[in-house]
Image (tube, rainbow, N blue to C red; front, side, top):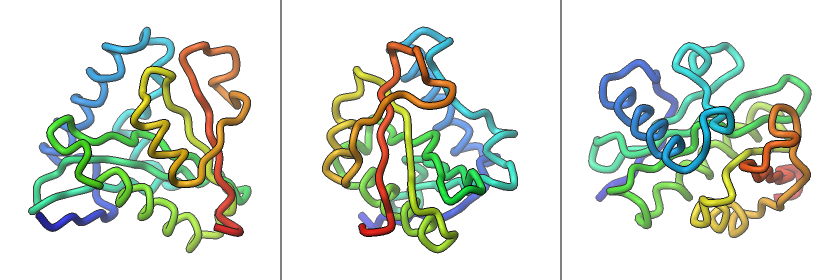
Length: 154
């Protein structure tokens, strides 16, 4: 199976279905106030690059890079469909997001995930992310785990 990861519009029927799957996944694990998910309008914002991961042309994963405009960025909506987990699509999407960040002068990238998402945390740690104190809207949220990676020396 050939994997591709590229910037795309989030307003495609199969991508909207993936975003709904992501919403249901997160809401099954955490209370709604701890699900810090960008909606489609936010994903279309000028500071956001939205990526779709595909295998054999089928959309199976999403990720977004939010450029904060200060040399830092945040990964949002990182999700791989249950059917595609373990196939390397998450690693490929993370690599694409990091490459876009480097090209756009983002030297520090942060993300938030949940403590019950062990596979995601392991992927991020293997990719050089370290757990940091919760930042921004995640401060005080016991269902948030924040991570960071410097792209300057990576």
